Amino acid sequence: MSIISDSLKRIKPSPTIAVTQKARELRAAGKDVIGLGAGEPDFDTPDNIKSAAINAIKKGDTKYTAVDGTPALKKAIVTKFKRENKLNYSVDQITVGTGGKQVLYNTFMATLNKGDEVIIPAPFWVSYPDMVLLAGGKPKIVKCTEQEGFKLTAKKLKKAISKKTKWVIINSPSNPTGAGYSKKEIQDLARVLIKEKKIHILSDDIYEHVRYDNFNFFTIAQISKLKDRTLTMNGVSKSYAMTGWRIGYAAGPKDIIKAIGKIQSQSTSNPSSISQAAAVEALNGKQGFIKTRANAFKARRDFVVKSLNSIKGINCLTPNGAFYVFPSCKGLLNKKTRLKTDSNFVQKLLEKENVAVVQGSAFGLDGYFRISYATSMQNLKKAMTRIKSFCESITR
Ligand code: PLP
Image 1 (tube, rainbow, N blue to C red):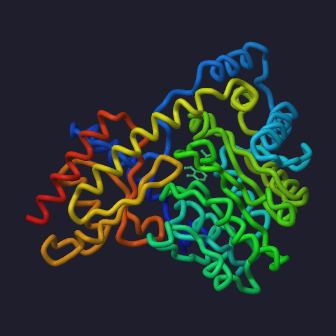
Image 2: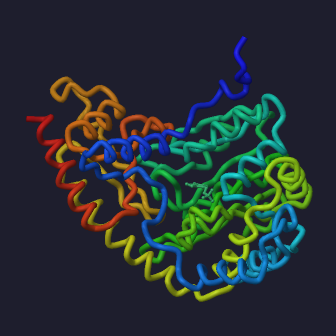
Image 3: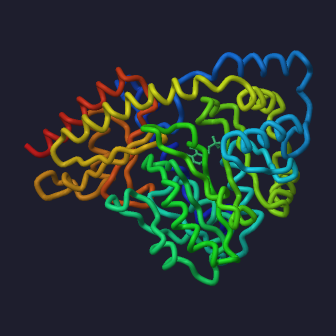
């Protein structure tokens, strides 16, 4: 009999982390690998945030804190929601965890019973289905096509709802496609959900600040009839280049917030006291660099989209947020190239040209691949040249 639990057998390790690891290993073996798999900004954490952490250490803020966040951080989060999203929450509607990832994991552990369904629009962030499975729930994957801008439509949402649906996940701007939902698109989904009073909505807003072309960010809890059934998750990882600090948070119904805290109290306890102090400064401090960095990302996005679309067989939409593009490689999967799947494409690209990207099937949609352009323009230029030369070589 295996020592490993049945629930663990239901899941697989994160494929995006696996690609990053593979690129790291090849690099260590002396290969000139360009990794376009990582889901983190290449920028450094701003200095004012680093100083806040150093001050916290010097002041002795190095002990356990309240399990689900310090009063100072919860207050900063309440202020953030008011300032940026026009949402009013009290501090007991806020929870802080070790990254948005822990907040999501705790949410599913705290709310799912065996067989409960969670509607997950695909392409999805790789961790959603596995977290749901681990918690005993059932991911209900709804494929959203390129023609639909990779976004869930009201019609598809309606069709996916069953008596067992407990949650619907909305992730805007999205990982892996970068697609952001307009206010109208959110309102269309809301019209369906307002009638479905038992369903809760999980809005993953982690890429809120990485957006372009005057895209107006709108989160579903701003629709007052749904606020009581929505958990709005966010964090400092992507907005403030703080992935390693591990601070994520959520706002929502008090019973869910309390339940998340209960799990945390018996697992990890509080997120790092020092990281929490840094997150207070991130949320309360100067915000100017967010725009500067978004502009830098935009230049890279424009370059990458243009380069990819100049390659025969590749088609790439222009996303309005996050730092990913999700091009189609379907035009290159045929007898001539002898590539059948996106996984074949990605593997050969790594072997032949030392460029690491992630296959679309890992995100629930075949025939695509994800590029993270959170790396230097110099790397991107090299990578695009290599991808072009790879695609030309297989069609020759
Ligand atoms: N949600 C999405 C869509 C993500 O892409 C990520 C990280 O890659 C997270 C949540 C979790 O981020 P963190 O745990 O660093 O806060």
